[in-house]
Length: 92
Image (cartoon, rainbow, N blue to C red; front, side, top):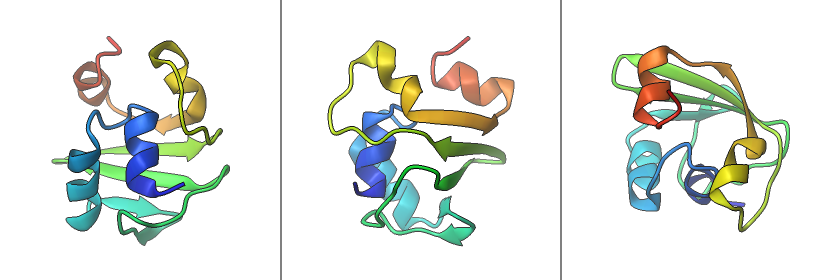
């Protein structure tokens, strides 16, 4: 699955165009390397996303093309994320 689509389906980033812009702007790393929107992701990959001065780190746990909102968090494991980033994603 493409990185920008995974970010949208997993709801780490709400819109695919925003995910695409984040990747194109060099704010998303996949396994330690800056990733383009079309980079292929697979289970076990490590994502690092910079939200301004904050950084979120995630491990991809599951790849699905379609997932219900309440099951989206099953697609990744949060390794590191600050409280403000969680609040922006609607988790607090």
